[in-house]
Length: 196
Image 1 (cartoon, rainbow, N blue to C red):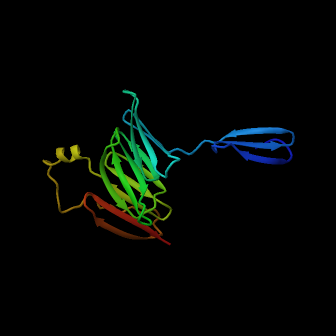
Image 2: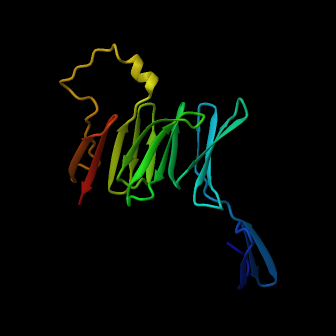
Image 3: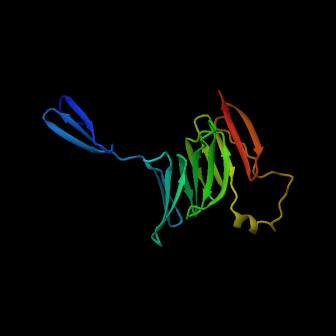
């Protein structure tokens, strides 16, 4: 809220990060802060920014203990989230309308697992084994794989008669739910759409 009666002029600074408003006989300056996507995993701060010279995003993995930074250049980032030692980067695929690439990365930016989805991510959250991606109408649960965890679980007995990764989540008991699940190269992706 700017005090005064009438705004007579508004102007942007050359690089687009400051705004000046003339109100009555006063000048008001405002610094514009961009909405950076960032996360923290392990001892690493992860943040992204758009490079002005091209439409790529630079993702910086800054290790706070070692004070080292690792850079990764990706297509425009739609979402970024983290849990413990890993993070997920979700980017828009250029040539495919409505397709997104999910990448699980470690603290130095190395991709550990990846998958394509056809769901526009609006909300993203993850834990040590799953990522939940949602928009206003549907959500997807991805059980991602971390190579060292898979090797430790090889000797564990698993009952194949019951699939532990097939879960149905009812958001509202009155809504019909259409469930489509498909096996893709690694892991299992479940898409649950709410029908009105």
